[in-house]
Image 1 (spheres, rainbow, N blue to C red):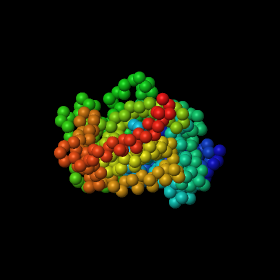
Image 2 (spheres, one colour):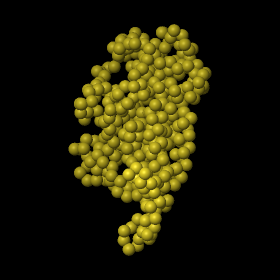
Image 3 (tube, rainbow, N blue to C red):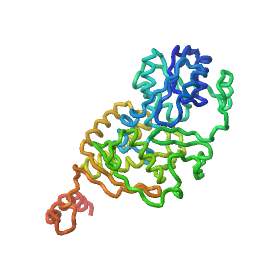
Image 4 (tube, rainbow, N blue to C red):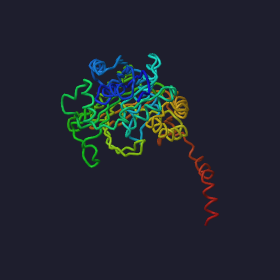
Amino acid sequence: MGRAKKVVLAYSGGVDTSVCIPYLKEEWGVEEVITLAADLGQGDELEPVKQKALKSGASESLVIDVKETFIKDYAFPAICANALYENRYPLGTSLARPLIAKILVEAAIKYSADAIAHGCTGKGNDQVRFDVSTTALNPNLKILAPAREWGMSREETIAYGERFGIPAPVKKSSPYSIDKNLLGRSIEAGILEDPATEPPEEIYEMTLAIADTPSEPEYIEIGFTRGIPTTINGQPKNPVELIEELNKKAGNHGIGRIDMIENRLVGIKSREIYEAPAMTVLIQAHRDLESLTLTADVTHYKRGIEETYSQLVYNGLWYSPLKTALDAFIQQTQERVSGTVKLKLFKGNATIVGRWSDNSLYTPDLATYGAEDQFDHKAAEGFIYVWGLPTRIWAQNNS
């Protein structure tokens, strides 16, 4: 079934994306497959991945380092939005997909390909994120998703690949499905599919078990400039360094583990385990600094759109008009969100113990209950009368 002549395939080096190469050529008549692996800080050695793609039949194998772009242009805006899907998940995997789609589209244009392809199945969220992001960036590109259509079991997929020289996994594959990048890890499948089963310690990599964490707390100070984290303990850090250091510090204290029943976009409930040490701490600190520097009405209104923002990102609408409009609002709110937040890291908790800013709206002379109090207490009676007047009238008419 020929659908395209030249295709750029999102490539991870796993069984499904490797088998996609001969499948696209043999079953769908694609003449040339170019693979693209994005370096998002997953920690894997990508040279073997590149070589595997070539051995599997790719005409060219691209590896693109996008770590800094990932943090600056995707993670930092999400932090400014305090983006937590269903108020828990800091969107580590979700944020990577629109970036991968972007570089797929750019590669397709550069190499004059007429389609992009991915190895997503029909049950997950990633297929939506790739497809919708690609369409938003270049509606003329075709999108091929072989794994969504080939109907093969994992065993059949491995056997198909062996026919074309793709080796089966050397050892028994992990029962878990794991995705990893600089922002954290997502773990699913295996025994985790039973929501009543406690996750075994072996699944974690970035966070220590509470029993193994230090017996003394660690204090850190995170500095923000217009909503963007820029320093740790007063030392300037570039975006990648900052995330890496916070992952290590917070993970060492067991911070950032999330175990949740998640509502996927396709309508399925899924049990997901996440590790996101840096993002957990950064969103908590950022939200606290906003409470110090934003007015009450801006803070409350922004909280209302943060859930919408999180849903848009999770649901693959990073490049949508509403997301763009919300970005403009959020960016405007961040003009005053500069300052420092002090946290205590200890036994799985990041506790905020202090914050300060040149833009602080906290007024000690008004807040104090001491002799320095400058608040006009007599004004409160008139305020309460006017504030409560609609309720008074309603009560009188209904008594």
